[in-house]
Amino acid sequence: MEGTRMEGTRMKKNMAFWALQRISAIALIVLLSLHLWIEHFAAPHSTVTLSVVHSRLDTFRFLLLDYGLLVLALFHGLNGVRNIALDYTRLAEHSKGITWTLAIIGVAFTVYGGVALWYASRFIPV
Amino acid sequence: MERVAVRKVGEREAPDLRKMDIYTRKMPGMGAWLLHRITGLGITFYLLCHIALIGTLIFMGGPNFNASLQTLMHTPFFMALDLILFAAILIHVLNGIRLLLVDLGKFILHQKQSFYIAMSVALVLFVAGALRVLT
Picture 1 (tube, one colour):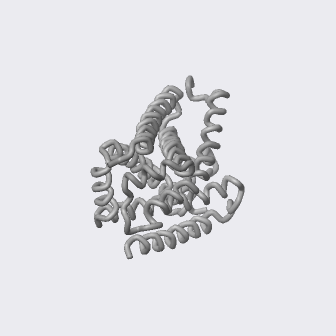
Picture 2: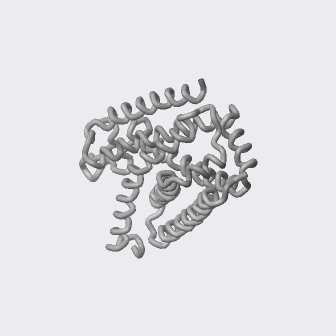
Picture 3: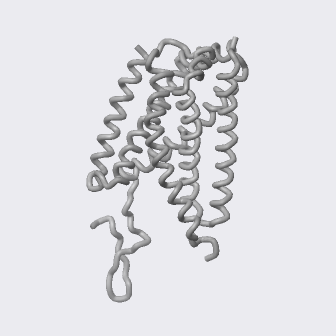
């Protein structure tokens, strides 16, 4: 049947996604643990303020943590949604549409979150 | 093998592949697979909401950000939702670590046990985290 056979490049792309899903998972275990500890468990009864966020983003390690989490969590989550969606269709044109839709969502949220982080680091909040 | 249905093929009986029920809903492997998907979808949905909300609050400036975070982090309703999210993350992460180990060839013959161990660790971490936040 047309479109059901997996061509070489498509298989290579899926293998790369398979590997990236696992690499991002390992990185996320570290980054998410740090994020949860810093924001919630280190001082459970205090509240995160924008000035705290601002001063944190002056340091390289928080830039790495926040931008890293943003990109890797979005990739891992949306690629996971792609894996589930592709269990329900084998047609090449469907999988292309799914991949592009999720990619656009991923880029849009990365840009929005990235600009917000940049705004928080650039402008001193009142 | 009582799970294998049998059908007549000519003169002899053969396993009916259409009715073979290898992965039943009651098996822990099926539960693990389903749990991983449901928690993954839930966490991804939360992630999109989280980026949209925190991003918007940053653009709205300090007073709005601080007041909203005060509500989100310390109101019982939102704390309960946070704990559900925490449980989902722990289940997904611990089962995910198990899956990474299976990919590396570890515990392939002990997947049931490794799943129960992963969930036990998740439960211990959940109780420890919940106690730290609530007390």
